[in-house]
Amino acid sequence: MANRRMRAPLESFEPEFNLKIEDYKDYIGQEKVDEIKLLAEPLTGKGWANLNSTFMGGGVAEMLRSVIPLARSLGMNAQWQTIRGNEEFFQVTKKFHNMLQGVGDKITLEEIFHAYLGTLDQNAANTFIASHMVVVHDPQPAALVMNGVIYGNILWRCHIDTSDPSEVVWRFLLPYINQCAGAIFTMPQFVGAGLQIPTYQIQPCIDPLAPKNRQYSEEDALKILSPLFNEYNIDAERPIIAAISRYDIHKNQATVLKAFKRMCKERKFEKQPYLIFLGNTATDDPEGGAMLEALEAEADEDENIKFWVNVENNDCVVGALMHYAKFFTHISTREGFGLVVTEALWQGTPVIGSNVGGIPSQVVDQKTGYVVDPHDVETIAAKMAHLLHQPDEAIELGKMGREHVRRNFLLPELVKKYMKLLRFYSEVDHDVPEFRMNNLSYSEVMCHARRKHPYMQLDASSM
Image (tube, rainbow, N blue to C red; front, top):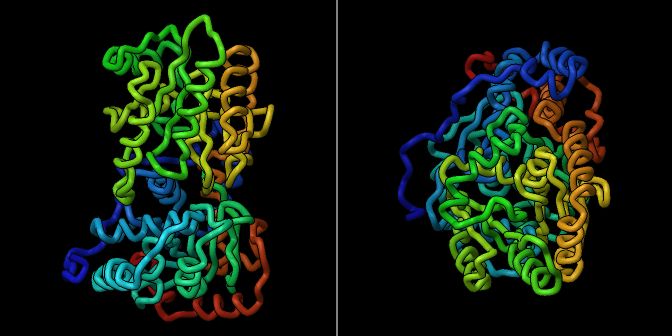
């Protein structure tokens, strides 16, 4: 129950591997490696804390699992902690997530004050975070910023599409967000009304050294996938369309399924294609099971539609399937960014993506794939058929997609921007970072006051 006192402290992440910026030289070049090392020099010992709701599942956790060891190797005291919550808490924060992304829903005062604020109050009893910069990720821990247990320059990082949020939820969260020294959004259109703090744009990135993002050969990919092909009776000679994401109303898998069925009904192929849905459930997402059941019912035992759920060796399977597939589909109705799109492009696989959120910044129409309306089943089906009938074009789109990711969406670029924020908020630099989206002088005065907080005089070893 939410009123039961929690006694265990917040969980802290300890990396299982080491990363060095030199490890990325083959991907970003020596010049960028040297630039990042120069930026990091005055940040030795500076504290950079991160707070979210889960170590596993979802793009935020995947990024932080590589960000922390890389930042530490660059000399920063990078930390990552997670709050504790029960099913009731995550049911409410899932409502927050959906409503902030424009889904009509109702939320009660009991849910807000008991399940949400009550749970964060319990977390506060076991929380003490003091760092030069503290990044609080998404709505789950947002209200904790007013409990007097986080000290430093707090930045709220919004990873979701808040371009048309529920006014009820946005107004509720706004006082907590405005308590921060700044807010970070993926796209300018996600910045909500009423913010009185500096805002920054940082787009997510992938780690090319992660197992999922290894550059597989056709032979390597097939070797990884063969056990699943055998289990699900899949002919490796037939073309595969991949759809990989958690099972979520915004991911719009039902439309992908409808478009595939329409294509198969209207078009003839020498070898009938498969549609493979691959998805896992995140610990902070209680709706995935119901969404999966609805999709399976709609598939109606079509032998060309497969569902792979919580597979073993997940990261390698994801990377191998993305490489082996003829193309990838991701036509969300709302999307903060869509790291899964980045991952597919990195494998050299073209993407049919929707024209929402951060997807069009990755899927450049007719250059790295095709951009479609997420509700236009006819066009989606036509683009699917086109890529299957034009394999040479698909290969060229995939090559351009991989280069687009290399230039813009690899992990060192993400860490570089956070380092610039840390340099600014720890007063190494006084110039505003170039990815700042507004200029609020009053907020700068408030941020200066926070930087002078006595807790900021702590030794770096205590942060």
